[in-house]
Image: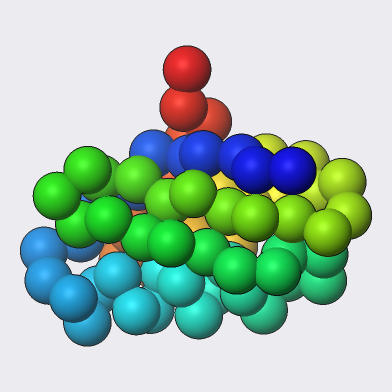
Length: 70
């Protein structure tokens, strides 16, 4: 299962790596592919993780803001 979230505030590959690390630390997340250009993250899940939890992990970094895409 995949979920896509919008991520604002990223400007470089280092930013994307921080967002990826925050997302992949969540239990149930297999991997996260983060795009600076696309301003989003595609998260592959092995369990049902609410999109709100994904966004909260990104927002907790204090540098980036995430919201449900759609």
